[in-house]
Length: 285
Length: 235
Image (cartoon, rainbow over all chains, first blue to last red; front, top):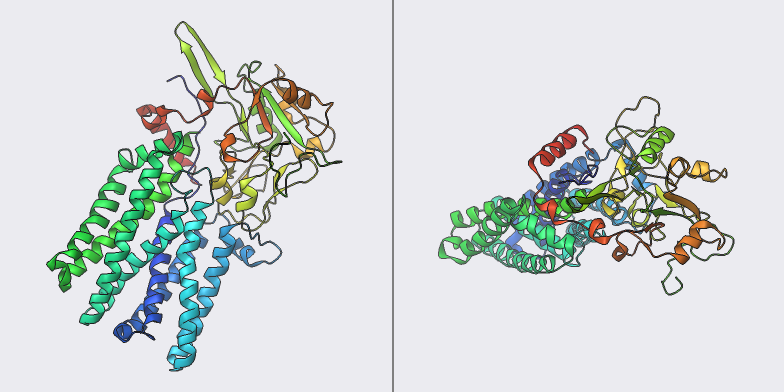
């Protein structure tokens, strides 16, 4: 005892992790819808994946704007006189708006059955969709004083998590066709494996970092976040579904559904722990 | 200092430009908190948040113990991460003087600047205030820009009874801060972040300025206080 400091907030609350979750799924679902123009087995996902992607995009927008302390000023992010291109949030805002506009155009072209334009918009939209998890990763990476966040892994990790969660949701939407289920199983398995490998790497570099990193490692593995990060995020939400998907049961419909559910729970837990984990130690400084 | 790389927004060594800095002589600080009070009065800083604050640690072994005070404020970095991270340019660096300031009318409240500040110098203003209509935006120490540009010292410097806080232009070799920085061993907080702070400490022990292991096992009473604070001050 004998120490005194004032209290500090975590600047970014858990709402952001819900945003990371929904925008990641939205991006991946758009990608699966777009893929249907080039791979026949995804055909049954074309409409349903797109509609859900669009709904989640709208939900993400509301979450993002609602978390601003001056929500009405979100238009400032579109004011060319104000834009600061050294901030990943600027790029993210522009990416979100462009993705929304391309999604709208894609919707109208799909309705018109204009295959040529739909294909083109599918490609452009997929690239913009890729930008969404990449920018959310950069949102965290650029803060050089934050343990866990400040690693080049973050944008790639968010892309992989987006694919895992998106494929898990798509497996609920596209049940019935065997070929599609096999493809989605592959997506879930390989991207979950990529997430697992990146998490091991992340934990290793965090554990061997400076004081802040080391303390963050302690908080995330055995401290307040231990249960949600290690228990739910890694063991239940990443390792267990990988094992399930590798087992014969994981090739059946019910096994895939169970794995998808676990991956979704794990995806949310990982995003939450990474967001909060990077902020805990700093609140004591 | 010439061995350090300079970025495009740094004001170090630019002829004709001022580069204000504060030197805090920890040997002189008695922890009276007059600086916090003066700052609160100058800016109507709301309850629960601070532009400057004075944390302490008790060091030594009983009976030979003392309080080690470490006044804190925005470091008005030469390479401020908050300026980089603000998506709408609401945070900016004044070229002549090096002040890092806020456009309150631009701030959208995304809190990216708070996340990027290694010093926890930024805070969110509450939704309603009694005397001031600047609300729900991020605020911080301004180095008393309004006073300094009129030839006055910042409020915390003016009021410091032990002259622990010294303020002046580092680009002026004759100033007291230049002389102190040049002749005495000084430290800055978290130099590894590369922010090049403009608040220099004399007598800073890095054992006290680093994250302590105690944060991993805070006392229950501290955890309860913290929870109560968080419940009442949602960012």
